[in-house]
Length: 274
Image (cartoon, rainbow, N blue to C red; front, side, top):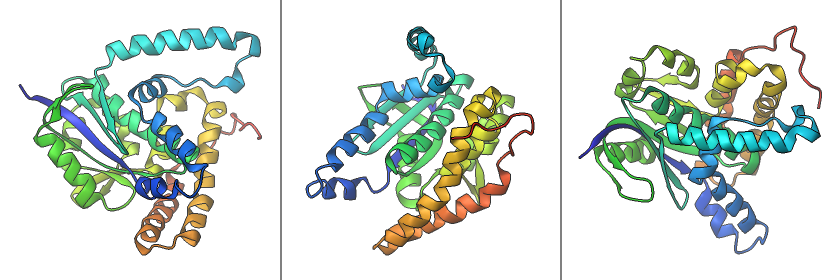
């Protein structure tokens, strides 16, 4: 009955504190609602398969482009075997281990989701990814040894705002040659590998499908990465909890470490000035 699947268990950091603060600040419930909509299955699927760069589309053609975009993402969802469940501030994404496209799409979804939550809602994620026996039915049962392991990686071992991955999970991914494009999403830490907000930017800019579209598409991501340093430092200054401060400090160092690894702008592809 069990299937062999890649599974990611993801938790939104600081969400509980945000909910507590919502009773005193009436603007927070709206922010919470927007963040939760971002992790709904439909939103994640649509964001993962394609990206509309509205600033590059003539106004008269936008409506038609959106129609094609909606039809394409609907068709892609039928083809991609990624299952998504969310509850409260947690998210589970899984894909069959023998489905190359779907299992790699899981990582692509996480990279884009982490950037989206950070840029639009100033939220960070922590998680665990593994491979193993699992039953995961959308809007239905979710259990298995792989679920237990992914939750353990997130809750006990990841500690900082990163997604921790078993070495066995990476070994399974690396059996497929096309996984080379996702190496930039990973960083090794002892026996484990991890993905962070910084490696998500590195992957999107260096190796993702969006990188093929050129600098007009990549410029917002480059700007988002550059601005993240300052945003994180401000959060460190305002943090009144030692545990929270240590997580932001870790991320600050992570961003600095990944900076030299970001592919520079190509000389013949000037960035659009904002």
